[in-house]
Amino acid sequence: MSETPQKRLYIKTYGCQMNVYDSERMADVLRPLGYGVVDDPEGADLVVLNTCHIREKATEKVYSELGYIKQMKGRKAQAGGKMTIAVAGCVAQAEGKEIMHRQPAVDLVVGPQAYHQLPELIARAHRATGERLSADFAADEKFDALPAERQVNGVTAFLTVQEGCDKFCTFCVVPYTRGGEWSRPPEAIEDEARRLADQGVREVTLLGQNVNAYDGGGHTLAKLVRRLARIPGLDRIRYTTSHPRDMGEDLIAAHGELPQLMPYLHLPVQAGSDKILKAMNRDHTAESYVRLVEKIRAARPDIAMSGDFIVGFPGERDGDFDKTLELVREVGFASAFSFKYSRRPGTPASAMPGQVDEAVKAERLDRLNALLDAQQKAFNALQVGKVLPVLFEKKGRNPGQIVGRSPYLQAVHAVGPDSLLGQIVPVRIESSAKMSLGGVLENQSLLESA
Ligand code: 5AD
Ligand code: SF4
Image 1 (tube, rainbow, N blue to C red):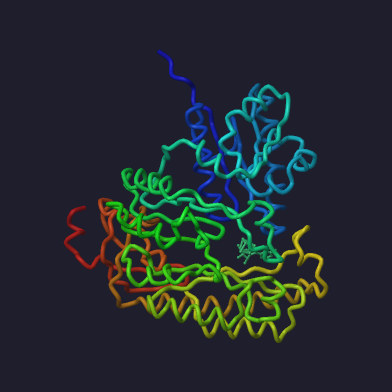
Image 2: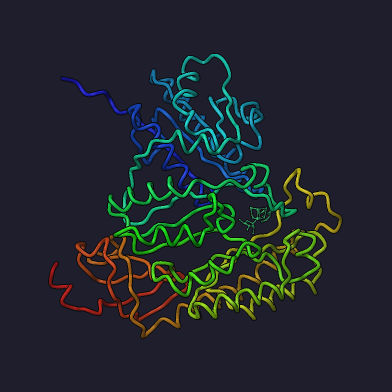
């Protein structure tokens, strides 16, 4: 009796968590065809680059990676094998066939809404005839056609509930690459969440480019979260990324009421100058953002705030940038992501006057990061001496060590037995750094179960 030989699938994921989710789902679609995921592209039968188009650097990285993969494809061909190269994700959506012109080694290009068509596309690419491009926008078809079964490894999982964006911030490509806002039906999400919980997942992160704009036939995100909070075993719920203009009263209230909803909120503000926010088409002011955070903190005082920032947007003067620093000081962020403005062809901001010099952008980014780093360290230091419930996820680097997450999404290291993986355990925090906390199990008898 001979087993079907496993075909080797290598997927490299760039960019946001929605891509991480999509990569897992691509592996799910391909598994029944005999593809097993490997962690080295050398010799793989199928290489998928799941790409990000948000900033210029992200796009360029994809092309340079394709250069390496092309050489591997050549080596495999010399050895008599065949490697298929697929480009997926937002670069695929945005550049389409252009990718094949720029890198002829690419066999197929598949946009974010067409992953369910991968098996067919691969079969066609193997025959090397016909249309080698698929990049449509029908998100509903995608989710209906993906297999219900997911292979999860671990106790945390992403779950996409919403895709696309109608906000058209003037710097951003997402409305063009991911299409308009679209929400999955709550029944399908609940079904997926139950299956995850049955497989031992304790924490889900609900994903969407505008997750708090979720609108599932009368279900707001708050209502969806309440529904999922009833699933036995699902002890922690997070969601990302939110837009300030969609932060509904019911969602704010849920943060005060639902113990499953974790006290961490990624709520990008982008800048602190109203002039710049207006030019970005953000539809909020610095003041309205600060008031919003106050309201959220009134519901959940300990919530860890996280944000995205862009420095050097066209027309940003020193005085405008100072207002970003002011806003950061006023809000206090537990974590943040900050970027130099990157000119994206086709977006309104790319044609705006007053493009900022790269050196000025770099200098502003350094100053902003220095402030944000100090705030992150201070937030982490605040936890020292507290006992936090930690969901242990994996073994640590040092022997005997296990690593998990606090409710505030901080990584927490402790000495403990592997039997605690998948459990939420009280940990007394003893040390803090910028990226993580260290602690000891509050209940030392748990150590003896090792
Ligand atoms: N330049 C720099 N940063 C950008 N972002 C989106 N588009 C751009 C751009 N053109 C950032 C925003 C967004 C995050 C995902 O990426 O801060 O919130
Ligand atoms: Fe891009 Fe703005 Fe939409 Fe976020 S809200 S995805 S930054 S357009």
